[in-house]
Image 1 (tube, rainbow, N blue to C red):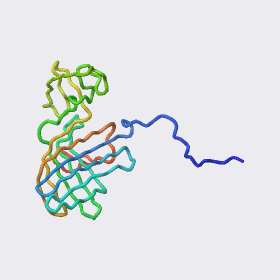
Image 2 (tube, rainbow, N blue to C red):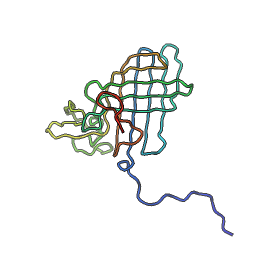
Image 3 (cartoon, one colour):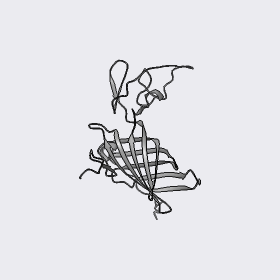
Length: 205
């Protein structure tokens, strides 16, 4: 007699890449005159997206836990960097918040922390460079997506942190504030990300 163990058969064959499926990740830290919080959204292709986050009322310290996040963005032409965005959040208790986000200044490049091939040798994180190793350099980040290096070459970093101004509306109660938002997009634009027209309204699909 043969007994099965009930273990699912492994999936074989070529792995579907992020470029093929499309991937978007948004991470917003913010604080307004009444609320503060962090909101994370991650979606791949048509997979069920991952959402987490907590927004706290600064006056009462009451917290609301996010259950759903929807994103729409307006990108700088020819790039994957946003000019403005809208983040719509639903919470466990039935409340909803709409956050309008506007990019302010240049986005922060992660080159100096070793990401994106950081360090002069271009090998990035995890390479032994001796007991003590010190480097310094200067980059031009005035372009919305290109990081211009001292020798005038440039790189397009996937991970950039964008300082933002924002306005929030929690069930009709408005507040203003600031924050930082990371938005990364890989491959084709996934269905979880809605594009805005130049006017700020959603683009026709």
